[in-house]
Length: 354
Image (cartoon, rainbow, N blue to C red):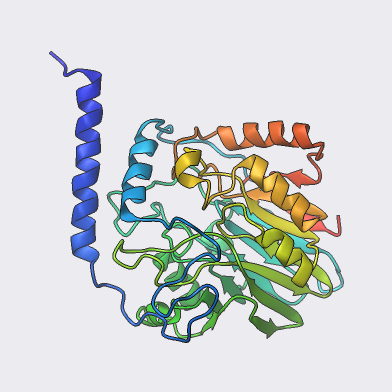
């Protein structure tokens, strides 16, 4: 006789708790050398915080998020349309080429520089190969097919955004400069990744006629659950030959978008997250939903926006197809056309000026 369905769910939840607790004990103390610097409007001398926030993320939130994921299981595998035409732009072309890899990984190619955002080619967004969010879609470009990579942008240290196996491969193959938020340089140095530039909000880095500005976002950081908010998080502004690209990383909705528009400028293209948003009671402060993403698009007065951070790793309760459905509804409500806020398939390209 099979056990009742609810007993099976309770067993899975208990197993999740046990494995997560084991992970905490195994990984406790694995990261050291956190950022030490003067207090600021987002750093109290020990931990970072979002200015004006009233409630901060905790270990209990992580547990609740894990339970929410179990309430809406994704399929074991999900097919993806791919169009991996990733040839380097010819030097005479003034267009910037955008290729969606998947999740938050985007390849940005200008005449002089190739940039990767939050690259992850691993099967799991996890410290382990046997547990943790598994990849539902293959990357739109095979790692072996990448053009030379000059810059890697890391928005924060969560496993689906800072993937050590991928960064090690990039470091060995291309020796790019890795741009990271405060507190992450020593961590990468521990993996023999030394060409690292660490930035605070509003600091700049210049390379090959391109200026990269580290910008605020409303999020949080943790890697071991014992290091909550010991490293910074943020977004990036890329200014290349007068064209502006905004990469939001991971963020909740806040006044940051209006501040960025005022101080950094209006993006020609914004890469905005649209997934991992349910339940809202738990994730509203740290993840945009599609309606929030449309509002961010408007706050930035972005000429174009592209959805990222959806349909690859199950990190929340909504179904795998829900972000695109909700984005369609949000566009209709706000009269934003699908050519102004669009979605690319894995490996698909978009050029701008269009």
